[in-house]
Length: 391
Image 1 (cartoon, rainbow, N blue to C red):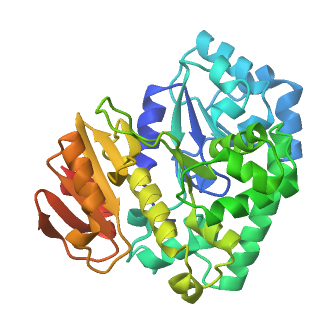
Image 2: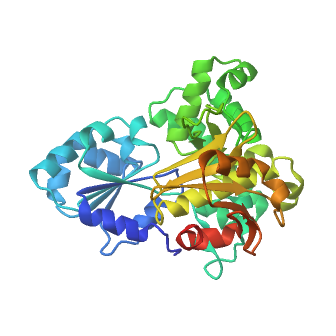
Image 3: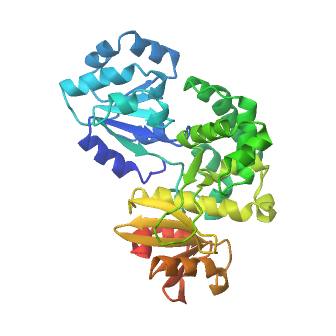
């Protein structure tokens, strides 16, 4: 079993809260994570008809009869569970009593936010992160994790055709079954087309009107679809950083795929040689690096916020991270040896915001200085030791 970075976080949450809600996309490893607990709690799969019906028939009776830690997988399938849990916790607050697993954010699952406010903590689980699978744990290289994506079932499949079949089944289940189960009414064909368009525009500035015109959908409908995709962990909206610096700033968010393996599937990139020459290669690597860094930092640095910065005059940086009162500018370059000729936009940002240090992240292994506070560092090293590198 591959040890996750989130193991320690999970145990900390269980020690401090009566209910812990673990959220993340389907097949990212939530069930595997909780099954590593010792002693293993009672496990209830609410997608399984027999388990669902047993609990739904008498929720309170089930909980009182099983007065031990319980895991409810896909808890969003039984919204009536949440108010009963609230009453149970208020009656007898025992930390680590309940673990809820879900594949949608609380804002999309009625009951969690309202019924369990102040009673549950939230742990957002990602697909595999590089420090979890780096050799010798697995034989995956960083480039292969980028190509395959981090979903365990896809990352560990060596056969490209089998992985393509897995992503096809995964996407069909999401569009045709999972969204309906969450009570989300969508046009499955339009959603699939939107996902393909978003894969081609991975990392681009969001323009709902443009996408809507291409799909024959209204501005509001396209925005609603993207909101659903964000709240089911398919997409990430990275918002721009605002200040009163008197600059003409870009004010719309960027849209990134959370998993590059899924984006590659939608782009028809089914083998590493195709990725090597594909025009979307640079944008895909940027999306991969950003998601990996944010995932690792969520359990290490715990930054206060993530943004990008862009002005109409050419000041630009891919990621602006707020951490311990500092603003950390990070630029991602898919280049063998980034130099100063690649950094005009970033240096403008540093000047605009009065920042003394900046980082350029690339696929290589060497760490070197470009002068004036700018350091070039390999993505693998940054992910392995973010506190050391950025501290």
